[in-house]
Length: 298
Image 1 (cartoon, one colour):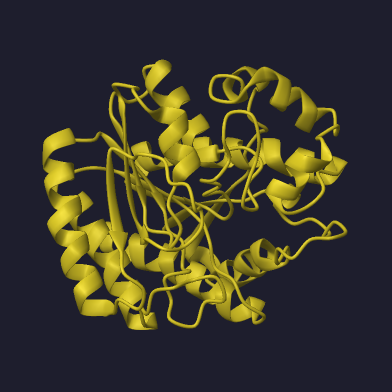
Image 2 (tube, rainbow, N blue to C red):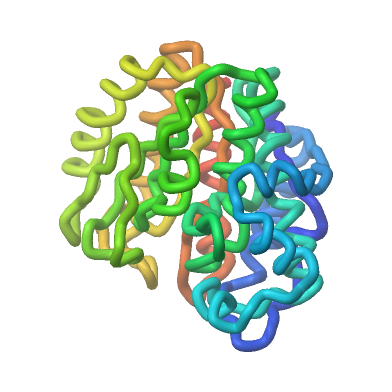
């Protein structure tokens, strides 16, 4: 049984002037529905405002929730913040929070959205409005749900917002393995950053992942992993600079899940990046992340 978190608000009409593929989350939902009784569906509540303000500047939270985000911040985000976008932005962190709670109970759970790792304290950026990973991690630790959360970010872009928003928090560590020359130009400092040269393929990637993540797992000893499972390291991704194959992505996810299982650490996954014109192909890669992790952790 795969415990999956989804909400209808994840699937919204594309706002004007947006290059983000808004149909991706609906396609992920539809492909998971095809798994039938293998999937147990869960609907989140919108995250409480106080937890958004625990990591984001209250003035920025107010701008989003009142649909009054300044134009310069909308440009950084990559699309206008309309009422439906604002509602979605509050729902997605609730989904990551719920997925984390389900993972602590069942060993694994997945959110069909989230991974919004570029959102910063006072603004969104890079298609990210609120940082669901940081919000969920801070709430989990500060409410005493679990003592040590490790955010493992395998998106092709550095998790700059997540690193910045959780820096110095004793119960949270961040790991980002990413293309060094890709967005964002100005990187933050994660607990451990692993910048990669352009064009790295499966074997070199997986060897580097092992040599860097395994020591962090053993040193930090997390009680929960939040996994930003971006599929944009894929060789043909429109915004990627790496060269992983479809099989390489599967091997990546199976490896991380195996290391987590060997240490008895539950794992909750979010979607993250994946870009191109073929929305169904991208959605299929995201679904494969979920099913691969579930299979390895089951």
